[in-house]
Image (cartoon, rainbow, N blue to C red; front, top):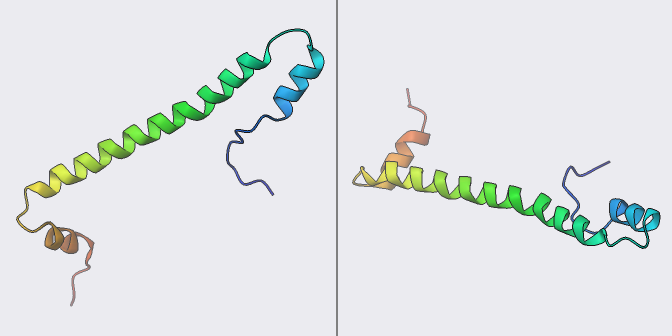
Length: 79
């Protein structure tokens, strides 16, 4: 069963390229590819997290008591 995450270790792709083209220095390009492959989603996710947190805090600034506003938003009305 797979875990569904991207493996960032040097693996099958790098080993295959190194075996097929032992004299060519293509491992550096593959390492750069792996860095980009892992860092772009990390940067995008971090940016979206910060933006959503800032938007939430901006919305809650207008209330005098943010805890009560959040409590009202999450509670279901009692009969």
